Image 1 (cartoon, rainbow, N blue to C red):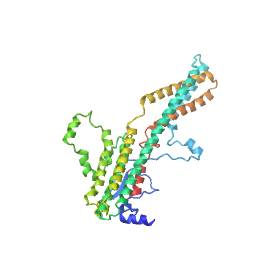
Image 2: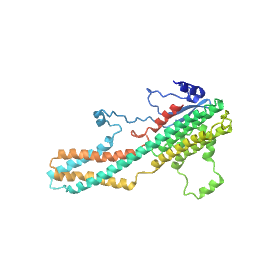
Image 3: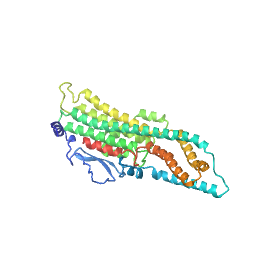
Image 4: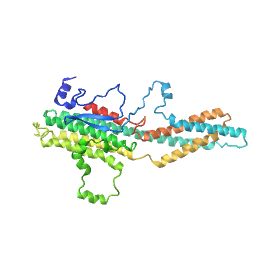
Amino acid sequence: ASKQVIMAREQDPLLSAEEGKNYTAPQESARPQPTVRFNIKFNESYSEVQVPKAKPIRRVHFHGSSHISVLFQMYGSVWPAVIPYCLFNVLLTYAVFITNRYTDINLCIGDSGHSFMSMLIAFLIVTRAKLAYGRYMEARHYLQNVYRVSRDLIQNMCVMTQHSRSEGAKKWRRDVAYRTIVLLRVTMAAIEFNSNEEESAWDTVPESIRSSRTKSVMTSRTSLERQLSVLAHGSRTRSDENFRAPLVLAHALRNEILSQRSGDRIKTRRADTKTPMHPNEERVLYRYVTEFITAFHGLKKLVTTPFPFPLVQMGRTFLFVYTYTLPFALAHSMHHPLGAMLMIFFITYGYLGLEYVAMELDDPFGDDPNDFDDLGLARVRSFLVC
């Protein structure tokens, strides 16, 4: 390690990377545990941000260079969901051919209508998949901002106040880092609430923070607020309270950053401004909190704004009508059932598979195989700075 890194570690225990002191290092060979924890030394003890009902999630991994593994991997694929529809349509095709061949009933229909409908179906399905992928990448962008801001806030806070090595300054740095990590964890729980309603964001807030000044922000209601609540359109739902948690913790984090002005924490004064921190440096830390909340609101927008229902309904109606009437049209132009059944299988897989891909991308937060590993990435960020 360079001299700068060694000096930084000596100045503040927060930057120490010694295993067992300030964080619990992840074991690469260990199997995932059903309980997820963030550990950080706080007030001479280990405080935990714990997810009581978290379960291990195996994300999708594949080797792009291996065509065989890509084609036949079932985990994370749409094959398990689409195969029943494909088999049903194949059996329907076989039944249509058998009925036409061995009975006097003619189930054939003209295929000209399906020729025109196929263009409309392709447009609706591809458009929906494209929009869903755009929302997916937008969510990834906001998550990246949340992780980046959390890391930069803690690192810049340590660098800007490294001139003070007093115990009060060290405790202030630990407190700010602790609240930042808790804010990150609670934000992950908030955006996953719609996918897993068993756990609210408030359930992940540690008691050490609930009992501090945050509790007053959570529960206090002034007389003006009580008067305004009468004029409200309705009471807060469980979802509203869930998305309120990161905002309350961001308010507490701003108060913690502001507490260094009292002089009890950072006693060493700067020579130019006679203050613990330069005002511009303080504004930088506040800007990081603002960027975090901006990214959170972007994630909240994606979580609370569903895909337009009329577009989903129209696309799915045309999809099923086209897919399950196609066997009757192919029986008019094809005479061998085996070729028609093979064609029906892959057409059904193609159209319904794209629809299921769009459904998978609509909600990338949760514990599905293709969802974002937001909690795992948050743990990585906390380990990098603690």
